[in-house]
Length: 493
Ligand code: TXE
View 1 (cartoon, rainbow, N blue to C red):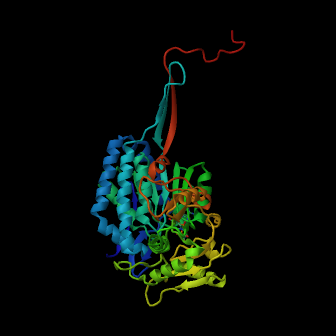
View 2: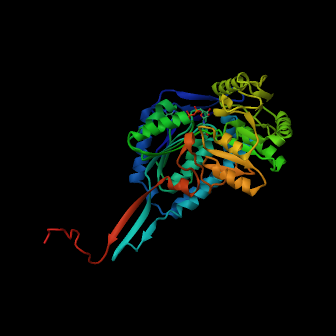
Protein backbone atom coordinates (compact mmCIF):
# COMPACT_ATOMS: atom_id res chain seq x y z
CA UNK A 1 0.00 0.00 0.00
CA UNK A 2 2.96 2.27 0.45
CA UNK A 3 4.23 3.91 3.58
CA UNK A 4 1.83 6.38 5.18
CA UNK A 5 2.69 9.22 7.48
CA UNK A 6 0.07 11.09 9.47
CA UNK A 7 0.23 14.42 11.27
CA UNK A 8 -2.38 15.56 13.77
CA UNK A 9 -5.72 16.68 12.38
CA UNK A 10 -6.76 19.82 14.25
CA UNK A 11 -9.05 22.64 13.17
CA UNK A 12 -9.81 21.07 9.80
CA UNK A 13 -6.24 20.49 8.61
CA UNK A 14 -3.17 18.37 9.17
CA UNK A 15 -0.65 20.05 11.47
CA UNK A 16 2.76 18.94 12.73
CA UNK A 17 1.78 19.17 16.39
CA UNK A 18 3.92 19.78 19.46
CA UNK A 19 4.93 16.22 20.17
CA UNK A 20 8.47 15.05 19.62
CA UNK A 21 8.89 12.16 17.27
CA UNK A 22 6.38 9.73 15.93
CA UNK A 23 4.92 6.31 16.56
CA UNK A 24 6.11 3.74 14.07
CA UNK A 25 3.65 1.07 13.00
CA UNK A 26 4.88 -2.20 11.59
CA UNK A 27 2.44 -4.57 9.91
CA UNK A 28 1.61 -7.30 12.41
CA UNK A 29 1.57 -9.84 9.58
CA UNK A 30 4.95 -9.02 8.02
CA UNK A 31 6.93 -6.84 10.38
CA UNK A 32 7.32 -4.22 7.63
CA UNK A 33 7.13 -0.52 8.39
CA UNK A 34 3.81 0.69 7.07
CA UNK A 35 2.93 3.94 8.82
CA UNK A 36 3.94 6.61 11.26
CA UNK A 37 1.53 8.54 13.45
CA UNK A 38 2.39 11.69 15.36
CA UNK A 39 3.32 10.93 18.98
CA UNK A 40 0.94 13.49 20.41
CA UNK A 41 1.65 15.75 23.36
CA UNK A 42 -0.74 17.28 25.91
CA UNK A 43 -0.36 20.57 24.02
CA UNK A 44 -1.77 18.93 20.87
CA UNK A 45 -4.70 17.76 22.91
CA UNK A 46 -5.25 21.23 24.39
CA UNK A 47 -5.31 22.69 20.88
CA UNK A 48 -7.72 20.03 19.64
CA UNK A 49 -10.09 20.56 22.59
CA UNK A 50 -9.92 24.32 22.07
CA UNK A 51 -10.60 23.92 18.37
CA UNK A 52 -13.63 21.71 19.12
CA UNK A 53 -14.82 24.18 21.77
CA UNK A 54 -14.65 27.13 19.36
CA UNK A 55 -16.41 25.08 16.68
CA UNK A 56 -19.11 24.23 19.20
CA UNK A 57 -19.61 27.69 20.70
CA UNK A 58 -19.15 29.81 17.58
CA UNK A 59 -19.02 27.55 14.54
CA UNK A 60 -21.84 26.66 12.18
CA UNK A 61 -22.09 22.93 12.93
CA UNK A 62 -24.35 22.93 16.03
CA UNK A 63 -26.44 25.72 14.46
CA UNK A 64 -27.14 23.93 11.19
CA UNK A 65 -30.49 22.29 10.64
CA UNK A 66 -30.76 18.52 10.98
CA UNK A 67 -31.22 18.37 7.22
CA UNK A 68 -27.94 20.19 6.61
CA UNK A 69 -26.06 17.98 9.06
CA UNK A 70 -27.60 14.89 7.45
CA UNK A 71 -26.41 16.06 4.04
CA UNK A 72 -22.81 16.33 5.23
CA UNK A 73 -22.96 12.93 6.91
CA UNK A 74 -24.48 11.32 3.82
CA UNK A 75 -21.70 12.83 1.72
CA UNK A 76 -19.19 11.39 4.19
CA UNK A 77 -20.81 7.95 3.77
CA UNK A 78 -20.47 8.30 -0.01
CA UNK A 79 -16.82 9.31 0.31
CA UNK A 80 -16.11 6.32 2.56
CA UNK A 81 -17.70 4.15 -0.12
CA UNK A 82 -15.63 5.83 -2.87
CA UNK A 83 -12.47 5.17 -0.80
CA UNK A 84 -13.54 1.69 0.28
CA UNK A 85 -10.57 -0.19 -1.15
CA UNK A 86 -8.00 2.19 0.37
CA UNK A 87 -9.65 2.11 3.81
CA UNK A 88 -10.00 -1.66 3.59
CA UNK A 89 -6.30 -2.00 2.81
CA UNK A 90 -5.37 0.21 5.76
CA UNK A 91 -7.50 -1.80 8.18
CA UNK A 92 -6.13 -5.13 6.96
CA UNK A 93 -2.54 -3.92 7.01
CA UNK A 94 -2.59 -2.09 10.35
CA UNK A 95 -4.74 -4.56 12.30
CA UNK A 96 -3.72 -7.83 10.62
CA UNK A 97 -7.37 -8.89 10.21
CA UNK A 98 -8.40 -11.14 7.29
CA UNK A 99 -9.62 -9.12 4.31
CA UNK A 100 -12.68 -11.35 3.92
CA UNK A 101 -14.03 -10.10 7.23
CA UNK A 102 -12.62 -6.56 7.03
CA UNK A 103 -14.98 -5.71 4.15
CA UNK A 104 -17.80 -5.83 6.69
CA UNK A 105 -16.01 -3.16 8.74
CA UNK A 106 -16.02 -0.62 5.92
CA UNK A 107 -19.55 -1.48 4.83
CA UNK A 108 -20.57 -1.23 8.48
CA UNK A 109 -18.96 2.22 8.73
CA UNK A 110 -20.96 3.37 5.70
CA UNK A 111 -24.22 1.99 7.13
CA UNK A 112 -23.62 3.56 10.55
CA UNK A 113 -22.86 6.94 9.01
CA UNK A 114 -26.04 6.82 6.90
CA UNK A 115 -28.12 5.81 9.89
CA UNK A 116 -26.62 8.62 12.00
CA UNK A 117 -27.51 11.05 9.18
CA UNK A 118 -31.14 9.94 9.45
CA UNK A 119 -31.07 10.58 13.20
CA UNK A 120 -29.84 14.14 12.68
CA UNK A 121 -33.26 14.77 11.12
CA UNK A 122 -35.12 13.20 14.01
CA UNK A 123 -33.60 14.97 16.98
CA UNK A 124 -36.80 15.80 18.82
CA UNK A 125 -38.05 16.40 22.32
CA UNK A 126 -41.43 16.37 24.02
CA UNK A 127 -44.03 18.98 24.73
CA UNK A 128 -46.67 19.15 27.49
CA UNK A 129 -49.78 21.27 27.63
CA UNK A 130 -51.46 19.38 30.45
CA UNK A 131 -49.52 20.91 33.31
CA UNK A 132 -51.88 23.71 34.28
CA UNK A 133 -53.69 26.76 33.02
CA UNK A 134 -51.57 28.78 30.59
CA UNK A 135 -48.56 26.51 30.97
CA UNK A 136 -46.59 24.98 28.14
CA UNK A 137 -43.57 22.83 28.75
CA UNK A 138 -40.96 21.87 26.18
CA UNK A 139 -38.40 19.20 26.87
CA UNK A 140 -35.83 19.95 24.19
CA UNK A 141 -32.86 17.89 23.15
CA UNK A 142 -29.55 19.68 22.68
CA UNK A 143 -26.07 18.48 21.74
CA UNK A 144 -24.09 17.58 24.85
CA UNK A 145 -21.15 19.71 23.69
CA UNK A 146 -17.51 18.87 23.03
CA UNK A 147 -17.10 15.11 23.16
CA UNK A 148 -13.94 13.09 23.70
CA UNK A 149 -13.83 9.75 21.90
CA UNK A 150 -11.24 7.06 22.60
CA UNK A 151 -11.13 3.99 20.35
CA UNK A 152 -9.29 0.64 20.37
CA UNK A 153 -7.32 -1.21 17.69
CA UNK A 154 -9.54 -4.15 16.81
CA UNK A 155 -12.12 -2.37 14.61
CA UNK A 156 -10.64 1.10 14.07
CA UNK A 157 -12.97 2.39 11.33
CA UNK A 158 -16.05 0.54 12.55
CA UNK A 159 -15.89 1.61 16.21
CA UNK A 160 -15.04 5.16 15.11
CA UNK A 161 -18.27 5.02 13.09
CA UNK A 162 -20.23 3.82 16.11
CA UNK A 163 -19.29 7.11 17.76
CA UNK A 164 -18.23 9.98 15.46
CA UNK A 165 -21.25 10.24 13.10
CA UNK A 166 -23.66 9.87 16.01
CA UNK A 167 -21.93 12.68 17.92
CA UNK A 168 -21.86 14.86 14.82
CA UNK A 169 -25.50 14.11 13.99
CA UNK A 170 -26.45 15.48 17.42
CA UNK A 171 -24.52 18.70 16.72
CA UNK A 172 -21.58 17.92 18.98
CA UNK A 173 -17.99 18.61 18.05
CA UNK A 174 -15.40 15.88 18.50
CA UNK A 175 -11.87 15.14 19.62
CA UNK A 176 -10.90 11.56 18.78
CA UNK A 177 -7.91 9.68 20.20
CA UNK A 178 -7.50 6.52 18.11
CA UNK A 179 -5.40 3.55 19.21
CA UNK A 180 -1.66 4.06 18.89
CA UNK A 181 -1.53 0.75 16.94
CA UNK A 182 -4.07 1.61 14.27
CA UNK A 183 -4.55 5.34 13.81
CA UNK A 184 -4.53 5.47 9.99
CA UNK A 185 -8.24 5.16 9.20
CA UNK A 186 -9.18 7.83 11.78
CA UNK A 187 -7.05 10.42 9.97
CA UNK A 188 -8.32 9.28 6.59
CA UNK A 189 -11.97 9.52 7.68
CA UNK A 190 -11.42 12.93 9.33
CA UNK A 191 -10.00 14.23 6.05
CA UNK A 192 -12.95 12.74 4.16
CA UNK A 193 -15.35 14.45 6.59
CA UNK A 194 -13.73 17.80 5.73
CA UNK A 195 -14.09 17.00 2.06
CA UNK A 196 -17.76 16.22 2.72
CA UNK A 197 -18.23 19.76 4.03
CA UNK A 198 -17.80 19.33 7.76
CA UNK A 199 -16.74 22.72 9.20
CA UNK A 200 -13.21 23.08 10.55
CA UNK A 201 -12.83 22.08 14.18
CA UNK A 202 -15.93 19.88 14.31
CA UNK A 203 -13.87 16.67 14.09
CA UNK A 204 -10.30 16.65 15.39
CA UNK A 205 -8.00 13.64 15.62
CA UNK A 206 -4.96 13.48 17.91
CA UNK A 207 -2.82 10.34 17.83
CA UNK A 208 -0.52 9.26 20.63
CA UNK A 209 -0.27 7.00 23.62
CA UNK A 210 -3.01 6.45 26.16
CA UNK A 211 -0.87 7.46 29.11
CA UNK A 212 -0.08 10.85 27.58
CA UNK A 213 -2.77 12.15 25.24
CA UNK A 214 -5.51 9.67 26.28
CA UNK A 215 -5.20 10.56 29.93
CA UNK A 216 -4.91 14.27 29.15
CA UNK A 217 -8.06 14.19 27.02
CA UNK A 218 -10.18 12.32 29.54
CA UNK A 219 -9.11 14.57 32.43
CA UNK A 220 -9.53 17.74 30.36
CA UNK A 221 -11.86 20.32 31.91
CA UNK A 222 -12.86 21.46 28.42
CA UNK A 223 -14.85 18.35 27.47
CA UNK A 224 -18.50 17.58 28.18
CA UNK A 225 -18.73 13.84 27.53
CA UNK A 226 -16.43 10.86 26.98
CA UNK A 227 -17.22 7.78 24.95
CA UNK A 228 -14.60 5.06 25.36
CA UNK A 229 -14.18 1.57 23.94
CA UNK A 230 -11.33 -0.56 25.18
CA UNK A 231 -10.21 -2.72 28.06
CA UNK A 232 -11.99 -2.88 31.41
CA UNK A 233 -8.86 -1.71 33.18
CA UNK A 234 -8.41 1.42 31.08
CA UNK A 235 -12.17 1.99 31.05
CA UNK A 236 -12.30 2.23 34.82
CA UNK A 237 -9.39 4.65 34.76
CA UNK A 238 -11.25 6.77 32.21
CA UNK A 239 -14.33 6.83 34.44
CA UNK A 240 -12.15 7.95 37.36
CA UNK A 241 -10.64 10.65 35.12
CA UNK A 242 -14.02 11.99 34.02
CA UNK A 243 -15.38 11.99 37.55
CA UNK A 244 -12.88 14.70 38.51
CA UNK A 245 -14.88 17.26 36.56
CA UNK A 246 -18.21 15.44 36.87
CA UNK A 247 -18.20 14.68 33.17
CA UNK A 248 -20.62 12.03 31.92
CA UNK A 249 -19.17 8.95 30.22
CA UNK A 250 -20.07 5.84 28.30
CA UNK A 251 -17.64 2.92 28.42
CA UNK A 252 -17.86 -0.18 26.23
CA UNK A 253 -15.43 -2.69 27.66
CA UNK A 254 -14.41 -6.31 27.29
CA UNK A 255 -16.48 -9.46 27.30
CA UNK A 256 -16.42 -13.20 27.90
CA UNK A 257 -19.58 -14.15 26.13
CA UNK A 258 -21.34 -17.49 26.31
CA UNK A 259 -22.36 -19.28 23.14
CA UNK A 260 -24.90 -21.86 24.34
CA UNK A 261 -25.84 -24.76 22.08
CA UNK A 262 -28.89 -26.78 23.08
CA UNK A 263 -29.47 -30.29 21.71
CA UNK A 264 -32.50 -29.11 19.72
CA UNK A 265 -30.54 -26.49 17.73
CA UNK A 266 -29.98 -26.49 13.98
CA UNK A 267 -26.60 -28.07 14.55
CA UNK A 268 -24.99 -27.13 11.24
CA UNK A 269 -25.85 -23.49 11.85
CA UNK A 270 -24.59 -23.78 15.43
CA UNK A 271 -21.26 -25.26 14.29
CA UNK A 272 -20.85 -22.33 11.97
CA UNK A 273 -21.79 -20.04 14.83
CA UNK A 274 -19.25 -21.65 17.15
CA UNK A 275 -16.46 -20.98 14.62
CA UNK A 276 -17.61 -17.47 13.74
CA UNK A 277 -18.08 -16.76 17.44
CA UNK A 278 -14.46 -17.20 18.37
CA UNK A 279 -12.39 -16.94 15.19
CA UNK A 280 -13.99 -13.85 13.63
CA UNK A 281 -11.48 -10.98 13.58
CA UNK A 282 -8.79 -13.36 14.96
CA UNK A 283 -10.82 -13.55 18.16
CA UNK A 284 -9.92 -9.91 18.82
CA UNK A 285 -13.53 -8.95 19.28
CA UNK A 286 -15.34 -7.72 22.39
CA UNK A 287 -18.54 -9.66 21.54
CA UNK A 288 -16.83 -12.91 20.55
CA UNK A 289 -18.49 -16.10 21.78
CA UNK A 290 -15.31 -17.27 23.45
CA UNK A 291 -16.99 -19.67 25.90
CA UNK A 292 -18.89 -22.41 24.07
CA UNK A 293 -21.40 -24.37 26.17
CA UNK A 294 -22.66 -27.57 24.56
CA UNK A 295 -25.46 -29.77 25.91
CA UNK A 296 -23.94 -33.10 26.95
CA UNK A 297 -26.26 -35.29 24.88
CA UNK A 298 -24.82 -33.90 21.61
CA UNK A 299 -21.42 -32.77 22.88
CA UNK A 300 -19.08 -35.48 21.54
CA UNK A 301 -20.36 -35.28 17.97
CA UNK A 302 -20.78 -31.52 17.95
CA UNK A 303 -17.31 -30.80 19.31
CA UNK A 304 -15.71 -33.26 16.87
CA UNK A 305 -17.28 -31.38 13.98
CA UNK A 306 -16.25 -27.96 15.31
CA UNK A 307 -12.67 -29.21 15.74
CA UNK A 308 -12.60 -30.73 12.24
CA UNK A 309 -13.78 -27.49 10.66
CA UNK A 310 -11.37 -25.39 12.74
CA UNK A 311 -8.47 -27.68 11.81
CA UNK A 312 -9.09 -26.87 8.13
CA UNK A 313 -8.93 -23.13 8.71
CA UNK A 314 -6.12 -21.15 7.19
CA UNK A 315 -3.86 -18.99 9.35
CA UNK A 316 -1.71 -16.51 7.43
CA UNK A 317 -1.52 -13.48 5.16
CA UNK A 318 -4.53 -11.28 5.98
CA UNK A 319 -4.63 -10.01 2.38
CA UNK A 320 -5.20 -13.57 1.11
CA UNK A 321 -8.91 -14.08 0.39
CA UNK A 322 -8.71 -17.63 1.77
CA UNK A 323 -7.25 -16.63 5.12
CA UNK A 324 -9.48 -17.29 8.13
CA UNK A 325 -7.15 -16.09 10.88
CA UNK A 326 -4.68 -13.26 10.33
CA UNK A 327 -2.00 -11.79 12.56
CA UNK A 328 -2.58 -10.64 16.14
CA UNK A 329 -2.08 -6.96 16.87
CA UNK A 330 1.49 -7.15 18.23
CA UNK A 331 4.06 -9.40 19.84
CA UNK A 332 3.02 -8.56 23.42
CA UNK A 333 -0.53 -9.53 22.67
CA UNK A 334 0.57 -12.75 20.96
CA UNK A 335 2.61 -13.55 24.07
CA UNK A 336 -0.41 -12.82 26.26
CA UNK A 337 -2.61 -15.17 24.21
CA UNK A 338 0.09 -17.87 24.29
CA UNK A 339 0.30 -17.41 28.08
CA UNK A 340 -3.43 -18.06 28.44
CA UNK A 341 -3.03 -21.24 26.37
CA UNK A 342 -0.17 -22.46 28.57
CA UNK A 343 -2.29 -21.65 31.61
CA UNK A 344 -5.21 -23.66 30.21
CA UNK A 345 -2.99 -26.71 29.79
CA UNK A 346 -1.52 -26.32 33.29
CA UNK A 347 -5.00 -25.93 34.78
CA UNK A 348 -6.01 -29.28 33.30
CA UNK A 349 -8.28 -28.32 30.41
CA UNK A 350 -8.17 -30.76 27.49
CA UNK A 351 -6.40 -29.24 24.49
CA UNK A 352 -8.15 -30.65 21.41
CA UNK A 353 -6.74 -28.39 18.69
CA UNK A 354 -3.74 -26.11 18.12
CA UNK A 355 -2.12 -24.60 21.16
CA UNK A 356 0.93 -23.02 19.58
CA UNK A 357 2.22 -19.81 18.14
CA UNK A 358 2.09 -20.42 14.38
CA UNK A 359 5.71 -20.71 13.30
CA UNK A 360 7.45 -20.11 10.00
CA UNK A 361 5.98 -16.66 9.44
CA UNK A 362 7.37 -13.18 10.05
CA UNK A 363 4.32 -11.87 11.93
CA UNK A 364 2.39 -12.51 15.11
CA UNK A 365 0.26 -15.55 14.31
CA UNK A 366 -1.42 -18.03 16.61
CA UNK A 367 -3.01 -21.34 15.67
CA UNK A 368 -6.73 -21.87 16.00
CA UNK A 369 -6.91 -23.38 19.49
CA UNK A 370 -9.70 -25.29 21.21
CA UNK A 371 -9.95 -26.51 24.80
CA UNK A 372 -12.62 -28.98 25.92
CA UNK A 373 -13.72 -29.67 29.51
CA UNK A 374 -12.95 -26.14 30.66
CA UNK A 375 -14.03 -25.40 34.23
CA UNK A 376 -15.12 -22.09 35.78
CA UNK A 377 -12.08 -22.02 38.09
CA UNK A 378 -9.70 -21.76 35.09
CA UNK A 379 -8.37 -18.45 33.76
CA UNK A 380 -9.32 -19.42 30.18
CA UNK A 381 -12.95 -19.54 31.38
CA UNK A 382 -12.79 -16.23 33.22
CA UNK A 383 -10.45 -13.86 31.38
CA UNK A 384 -10.86 -12.15 28.05
CA UNK A 385 -8.16 -13.80 25.90
CA UNK A 386 -8.85 -11.74 22.76
CA UNK A 387 -7.36 -14.36 20.46
CA UNK A 388 -8.33 -17.46 18.47
CA UNK A 389 -8.84 -19.61 21.56
CA UNK A 390 -12.13 -21.39 22.27
CA UNK A 391 -13.08 -22.73 25.69
CA UNK A 392 -15.73 -25.48 25.67
CA UNK A 393 -17.74 -26.55 28.69
CA UNK A 394 -20.44 -29.22 28.61
CA UNK A 395 -23.76 -28.80 30.41
CA UNK A 396 -26.81 -30.94 31.18
CA UNK A 397 -29.78 -28.74 32.10
CA UNK A 398 -30.97 -25.29 31.11
CA UNK A 399 -30.33 -24.13 34.68
CA UNK A 400 -26.72 -25.31 34.41
CA UNK A 401 -26.27 -23.41 31.13
CA UNK A 402 -27.61 -20.16 32.58
CA UNK A 403 -25.56 -20.48 35.77
CA UNK A 404 -22.33 -21.14 33.82
CA UNK A 405 -23.02 -18.34 31.33
CA UNK A 406 -23.63 -15.81 34.09
CA UNK A 407 -20.57 -16.95 36.05
CA UNK A 408 -18.39 -14.12 34.72
CA UNK A 409 -17.32 -10.62 35.66
CA UNK A 410 -18.42 -9.44 32.20
CA UNK A 411 -21.85 -8.91 30.66
CA UNK A 412 -21.62 -7.69 27.08
CA UNK A 413 -23.24 -10.33 24.87
CA UNK A 414 -24.48 -13.92 24.90
CA UNK A 415 -25.71 -16.32 22.23
CA UNK A 416 -28.29 -19.12 22.24
CA UNK A 417 -28.82 -21.89 19.69
CA UNK A 418 -32.17 -23.67 19.97
CA UNK A 419 -35.24 -24.18 17.80
CA UNK A 420 -37.48 -24.05 20.87
CA UNK A 421 -38.93 -20.57 21.36
CA UNK A 422 -39.56 -21.27 25.07
CA UNK A 423 -35.89 -22.05 25.58
CA UNK A 424 -34.74 -19.01 23.62
CA UNK A 425 -36.97 -16.55 25.45
CA UNK A 426 -36.59 -17.92 28.96
CA UNK A 427 -32.82 -18.25 28.68
CA UNK A 428 -32.48 -14.81 27.04
CA UNK A 429 -34.33 -13.23 29.96
CA UNK A 430 -32.09 -14.90 32.50
CA UNK A 431 -28.77 -14.01 30.86
CA UNK A 432 -27.04 -10.98 32.37
CA UNK A 433 -25.77 -9.08 29.36
CA UNK A 434 -26.70 -6.06 27.29
CA UNK A 435 -27.00 -8.12 24.13
CA UNK A 436 -28.42 -11.57 23.44
CA UNK A 437 -28.69 -13.18 20.02
CA UNK A 438 -30.40 -16.47 19.21
CA UNK A 439 -29.59 -18.65 16.19
CA UNK A 440 -27.21 -16.00 14.88
CA UNK A 441 -23.97 -14.55 16.21
CA UNK A 442 -21.98 -11.28 16.11
CA UNK A 443 -24.87 -9.95 14.06
CA UNK A 444 -26.48 -6.54 14.23
CA UNK A 445 -27.58 -3.36 12.53
CA UNK A 446 -27.02 0.36 13.10
CA UNK A 447 -30.49 0.64 14.68
CA UNK A 448 -29.62 -1.86 17.44
CA UNK A 449 -27.93 -0.48 20.54
CA UNK A 450 -24.96 -2.21 22.13
CA UNK A 451 -24.48 -1.94 25.85
CA UNK A 452 -22.88 -3.86 28.64
CA UNK A 453 -23.61 -4.72 32.25
CA UNK A 454 -21.18 -5.59 35.06
CA UNK A 455 -17.50 -5.40 33.99
CA UNK A 456 -18.47 -4.73 30.37
CA UNK A 457 -19.28 -1.14 31.17
CA UNK A 458 -22.27 1.15 30.76
CA UNK A 459 -23.83 3.56 28.32
CA UNK A 460 -25.12 2.90 24.82
CA UNK A 461 -23.52 2.74 21.44
CA UNK A 462 -25.48 2.82 18.14
CA UNK A 463 -29.25 2.89 17.80
CA UNK A 464 -31.50 5.70 19.01
CA UNK A 465 -30.10 5.21 22.52
CA UNK A 466 -26.51 5.56 21.26
CA UNK A 467 -27.46 8.82 19.56
CA UNK A 468 -29.15 10.16 22.70
CA UNK A 469 -25.91 9.66 24.64
CA UNK A 470 -24.61 12.66 22.70
CA UNK A 471 -27.57 14.81 23.67
CA UNK A 472 -28.74 16.60 26.76
CA UNK A 473 -32.32 17.41 27.74
CA UNK A 474 -33.43 20.91 28.61
CA UNK A 475 -36.76 21.50 30.30
CA UNK A 476 -38.41 24.77 29.41
CA UNK A 477 -41.62 25.70 31.28
CA UNK A 478 -43.51 28.74 30.03
CA UNK A 479 -46.44 30.53 31.65
CA UNK A 480 -48.65 32.53 29.35
CA UNK A 481 -51.48 34.91 30.35
CA UNK A 482 -52.03 36.02 33.93
CA UNK A 483 -51.26 33.66 36.77
CA UNK A 484 -51.78 33.48 40.47
CA UNK A 485 -49.19 35.33 42.64
CA UNK A 486 -45.96 33.47 43.06
CA UNK A 487 -45.99 33.65 46.83
CA UNK A 488 -49.57 33.40 48.12
CA UNK A 489 -47.76 33.45 51.38
CA UNK A 490 -48.93 32.98 54.91
CA UNK A 491 -48.56 36.27 56.69
CA UNK A 492 -48.14 38.03 53.39
CA UNK A 493 -51.34 40.11 53.59
O1 TXE B 1 -6.60 -1.60 25.45
P1 TXE B 1 -6.74 -0.17 26.10
P2 TXE B 1 -5.30 -2.37 24.90
C1 TXE B 1 -9.17 -5.64 25.68
C2 TXE B 1 -8.55 -6.91 25.15
C3 TXE B 1 -7.11 -6.53 24.98
C4 TXE B 1 -6.92 -5.62 26.16
C5 TXE B 1 -5.77 -4.65 26.07
O2 TXE B 1 -8.68 -7.93 26.11
O3 TXE B 1 -6.27 -7.63 25.04
O4 TXE B 1 -8.11 -4.91 26.23
O5 TXE B 1 -5.85 -3.86 24.89
C6 TXE B 1 -6.42 4.28 25.12
N1 TXE B 1 -6.63 7.32 29.25
N2 TXE B 1 -9.79 -4.85 24.64
O6 TXE B 1 -4.17 -2.27 25.86
O7 TXE B 1 -5.53 0.18 26.89
C7 TXE B 1 -5.52 3.54 24.18
O8 TXE B 1 -4.49 4.39 23.71
C8 TXE B 1 -7.31 7.39 28.09
C9 TXE B 1 -11.22 -4.95 24.52
O9 TXE B 1 -5.06 -1.91 23.52
O10 TXE B 1 -8.04 -0.16 26.79
C10 TXE B 1 -6.51 3.11 23.13
O11 TXE B 1 -6.79 4.18 22.25
N3 TXE B 1 -7.14 6.50 27.09
C11 TXE B 1 -11.79 -3.85 23.70
C12 TXE B 1 -7.74 2.77 23.95
O12 TXE B 1 -7.57 3.46 25.20
C13 TXE B 1 -6.26 5.51 27.28
C14 TXE B 1 -10.99 -3.46 22.51
C15 TXE B 1 -7.94 1.29 24.25
O13 TXE B 1 -6.76 0.77 24.83
C16 TXE B 1 -5.52 5.39 28.47
C17 TXE B 1 -9.59 -3.37 22.79
C18 TXE B 1 -5.73 6.34 29.48
N4 TXE B 1 -5.08 6.29 30.64
C19 TXE B 1 -9.04 -4.10 23.81
N5 TXE B 1 -4.74 4.30 28.37
C20 TXE B 1 -13.23 -4.00 23.31
N6 TXE B 1 -14.15 -3.55 24.16
O14 TXE B 1 -13.54 -4.47 22.23
C21 TXE B 1 -4.97 3.76 27.15
N7 TXE B 1 -5.88 4.49 26.48
